[in-house]
Length: 97
Image (cartoon, rainbow, N blue to C red; front, side, top):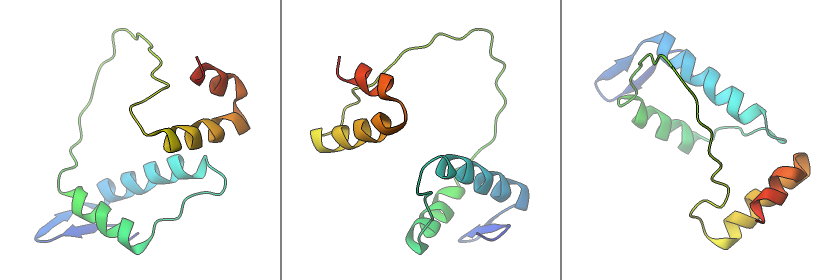
């Protein structure tokens, strides 16, 4: 992706574009094979970029909750579970409960 994105008349500074690129890389490189954006997905990111905002949050406490079943169709659920089973069978087992 280019260092600066453009969405219509709106230009986004290079640091924001670079941060989004870095975030995409971290998320996609964790998978094998890693995801490579297509021209269509790059266009979608450009379209969404105008709505991207930055904010800072100060966390005072953390409370964890698992939502492993999600509200998705059975085929997608099984595909997600199978992906987890390869690297984290304990997590896949939790999804069966």
